[in-house]
Amino acid sequence: MSILVVGSAALDTIKTPYGEVHDTLGGSAIFFSAAASFFTPVKIVAVVGDDFPLTQLDFLKKRGVDTDGLEIAKGKTFRWSGVYHVDMNQRDTLSTDLNVFETFSPKLPANYRDTPYLFLANIHPALQLEVLSQMTKPRLVMLDTMNLWISTALPDLKKVMAKVDAIILNDQEARQITGETNLIKAAKGVSQLGPKIVIVKKGEHGAFMVSGDSFFAVPAYPLESLYDPTGAGDSFAGGLFGYLTSCKDHSLGTMRKAMVYGSVVASYAVEQFSVERLRSLTMNDVETRYGSFKDITGF
Amino acid sequence: MSILVVGSAALDTIKTPYGEVHDTLGGSAIFFSAAASFFTPVKIVAVVGDDFPLTQLDFLKKRGVDTDGLEIAKGKTFRWSGVYHVDMNQRDTLSTDLNVFETFSPKLPANYRDTPYLFLANIHPALQLEVLSQMTKPRLVMLDTMNLWISTALPDLKKVMAKVDAIILNDQEARQITGETNLIKAAKGVSQLGPKIVIVKKGEHGAFMVSGDSFFAVPAYPLESLYDPTGAGDSFAGGLFGYLTSCKDHSLGTMRKAMVYGSVVASYAVEQFSVERLRSLTMNDVETRYGSFKDITGF
Image 1 (tube, rainbow over the protein chains, first blue to last red):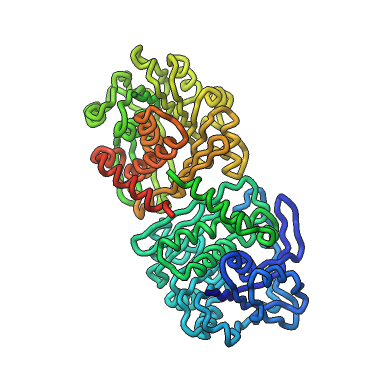
Image 2 (image 1 turned 90 degrees about the horizontal axis):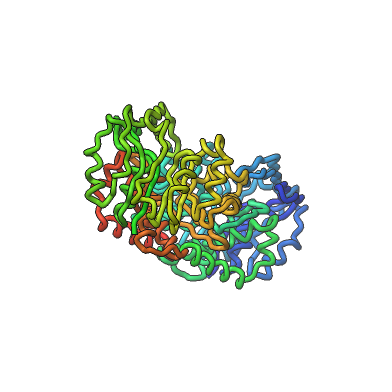
């Protein structure tokens, strides 16, 4: 089974207390693919400019990522620049240059439309709706979004939410959508807008899933040093959805394991800048840390 | 085996979005005893004024709490008043009247001094040191503290920390003591000051334990309504230390189970005002929710 991701591809310039990098691989679709490709074949739909260093995606192709849906447009690639402070939970965006991403209108290649699993990474909800309308009949659709769309495009976002099976969002976003401060109530409120499965990311505090009366919580892996938190959320989603797809089953039991695999991959992703750690990571590393999660949560 | 707690007894006036109560039972030693008494006999050392409604402690006596060490001083009982807002993670103290608690100097009855387990609830660290000096040879000493003593009495606090086996503190306190923003580093830094076992409480995000290279995390029980968070931390400590004492063993495996029992009791405590829920709680309720913790963390 394979998975289709539609999202952003970017060149990031990032400064953290551990160093800085310029025009390094970034974007939700890139991080998601790098993470999901450990588990399952991935098809990627995104746009880059003609300045994009395509050879840097070779490691993804080797891992079974199909980049035929990567549109190369005339102009510059989407660029994001930000700085993380000593408290890695806070970051400041220095600049966002949408460039070719500004007019991105995702067109799915014909052979992509019947992909059984679809991840709508964080792009404008109107575009997410366009993607959905091009799909034949996906078995499971998972959605990501951000505070910007909750503030500026809530009606469109609600339309997408009504059509998806699952949503991944962070604690602030869950509170923002519902106006509920209690996170459990907020997650249930999100579910009432459509997605049967709601996964809430809480950074250093881990993540939890609500589905009907079922609840599952997983802590974050206890890291003493985060080199670069960029892409942690997309790596989490990629590990999670990649594992799920490989199981061809989305029972709540499988979802729980998937959340742990997502946490594993995200915990590795932040150990180096950009996708560097996901480049060198092996399935053996993944399984070792999955075992650690068993250990740190067992009683 | 029995456990000795030295801390505060208070009359609380509390307002939350769910209602308000006046001069209701409160204080760290009271909440701790109410929680620990589900598991093991408890001896309590604290001070109240001659206005204290002693009959309200009858439910504790029935559960095996020895109140012979409760000093009744001439004057008024320690009173605290506070208000919780819609976001229950934030509270404002309206008034703190120390009254007889201001000159509290804990004297342990002779038959208390060889109690094997000691919980030093949140009082001035100089008093905690006095208590320690009166003990014969406790098997395990656990410490609680607060931001006020970290700011105003750090040298004394460090002296106590060097003498105890375990400490329970919240995330802000761990960061404040060590100056570390990364919580894992902060917990390890706290451990370097003495306590082999460091337990960090994170409210709605649960708690974790660090001991040497061992790490354990437990989520908070997913509550949609918290009626009154007052005493949650002391109830957590009471459930935890009570269970530990009943096991006569403080291996890390038992500590993990103890943290879950602490989380169970704390999750019940906040369901009603003051100690009301702990009054009506049964061991059957406790075991049922312990089972729920297995369920919400298992994968």
